[in-house]
Length: 420
Image 1: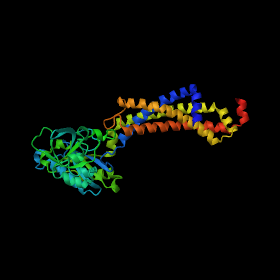
Image 2: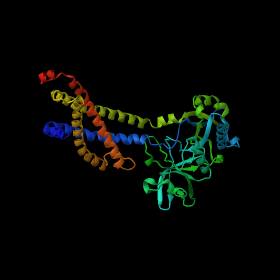
Image 3: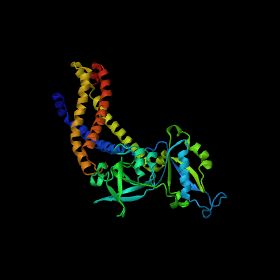
């Protein structure tokens, strides 16, 4: 090692340019890795719900000009009762596991209701989900303390609040255990306090939003409100269903075939059925395209970095073929020669990385990188991203040395010396 360090120092003029190149590439590559790490970490965070085999059923009304339309003035049953009848029929439909009604609550929803909760001196803005208890079973919410969707369903029926465990974490540092059992006031109401009887795992609003920025509270949507629902209100309500796993294939076609006969009640009809996967894809189309374009750009940049480092060390090793031959003549094995070249490249990388770490730290400290959990600089994230960047560069250097070194070792000593 001492001999190798002395050789690096003796060749410092040519090694300086390689060191500068490694320093610049190291900083750029770390920034790319750090940005990608945040994006991927956010994307693969637990969503807090499950949309597999779930569907949104759109309920509409008959055309008033249709001969089948029943004028509301001639009816004693209101639209809300008709809607509840459709819900009950859906619950009896063989393919369906659970049915829920909600307002601005289903995942990947372009509309939302806002509110804020207050308890003591704590106040936090949040999305307000109003849903029937089966909503928790449809989207399989999980309790932070291990409660099943069925248990959460039973708790919501009590007319209480269910909240995400991160509701007050970001602003006040309170966890789900801290707020469980307390009572919250909603909005400007100072009279009725809503007890929190269950805390779920954080629920995200989309795949590109971190749970750190997503807060929700869920309030019971009483199933006995038909007198408050008109035909105009029906379109604003969300009718969601979960289908049994073995019935999901072809469910939409089978359901629409019988919807007119089995699920037309009063003036209410089934207009359409859409899978939550399709809703997810449509809701996130712009973000997905942006993520794809960003990934292509990062991939192209990484490819150019790879070619640059590969070319540098390939050319450097190719120019030192005579040195390889001299080592062979002096009795060095191929493995010893190869490791000598590799170690030389890695030492230059380590020397560049030491300075690059200082630059990387200051970039993160200046908040020039994407924020994750409210911070651009944490010990774990910094160590992970710098290690990934270092390993990627080390791999590029090894590849850049490996192939030309192998070719150089195959050449006959006499031929190499003659070329020299």
